[in-house]
Amino acid sequence: ENNRIPMVAGNWKMNGDRYLVEQFSKGLKTQQLTCSVVICPPSVYLPLFSGHDFSLGAQNVSHLENGAHTGELSVAMLKEVGSSHVIVGHSERRESQQESSELVAKKAQQAVEHGLVPIICVGEPLDVREQQTVETYIAEQINALTDLLSVEALAQCVIAYEPIWAIGTGKTATPQQAQEVHAFIRRTLNEHAAGLGDGMRLLYGGSVKADNAKELFSQPDVDGGLIGGASLKLEDFIAICQAAN
Ligand code: PEP
Image (tube, rainbow, N blue to C red):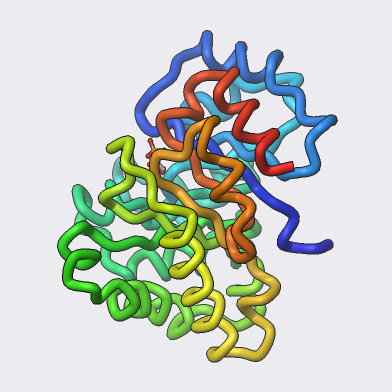
């Protein structure tokens, strides 16, 4: 399979309810789409989807297999309730749960090892963008992955570039800004192992909407998007999926 078929993933965050699950199960029909579609609801809703033809993902996972870890969920549990993907290292978790790049890499490793595709988020805060040290910042996040995961494991990962200043702010990166960082990430992965970056999906995330998706997704190194706010409205989300076709 060509890994770079565009992907559109929706991150519901701590939003949604049974009704939204039902609405998406019934209303989001992906047969006419050429992109892969993944919906990442709060994990408790994963088993409530039925009759859907898109993939499901969780928003976080433990880096451990099982045991005395109150409140945590394992890869095996998430698989059992229907997910094939999992977001790891979202900036909201890096920030509020102090998830380090090393921990994020462990989660990605655990996901691949036990059969979930990790969608690994990277991205810089505003001050880093202003100081023009984006590449150094992103390199640290990518290097934590290449330090821990084998080349074979990395090849199964999806990376989402999400500049923190663009998440939930309505301030989208320009297509050029997105392309620049995506090209940098791909180059970094290629330097780690020949051809690695060329075969991996790189998604852009940060205020993607129906009206800016097409231009972002048409950048040569942008293979789709990770969508927050606009993934909660079926019509908007469908329009974004269509922009990836
Ligand atoms: C996200 O949180 O992954 C995201 C991209 O959010 P939004 O689309 O709302 O900016």
